[in-house]
Image (cartoon, rainbow, N blue to C red):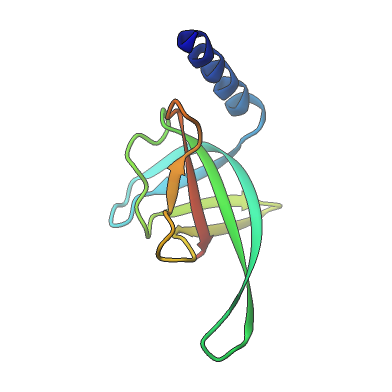
Length: 120
């Protein structure tokens, strides 16, 4: 049964890559090597209160990237670049709360990395 579920997960991952991705460039912090990847991107808006009591709105992006395209685990400070509506946007791999992970597995078979990033 597990093999059938794994086979289905691989099939679904192939469909995600083929039909629900956009091109991004991933760069590990401290390197000059750009890695072209296909990512499914989600946007979330969070509101925090800073130390002065002001309300701050922050846009967080989540990038789903296949392990087959990004073999090494993401590190805080890595950069993800994408072009949206003709505008180049750069995001830094990070979590808003230092207690949160900056990436997790996107599925139980570890086929996809779910990476959190904030505007650089």
